[in-house]
Image (cartoon, rainbow, N blue to C red):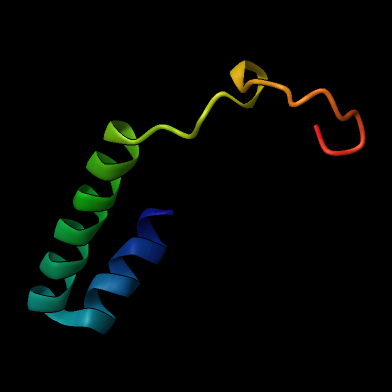
Length: 51
């Protein structure tokens, strides 16, 4: 995997690699702060065909 990352950094260059790293960190923070809903805890409406 390191070889692939090194090739990506070489392809993007330093500036775009830094931008990518910042965006990936931002995405990670977003996912950590906004976990998906726990669908098992959602209220059922009583219609088995739609629940």
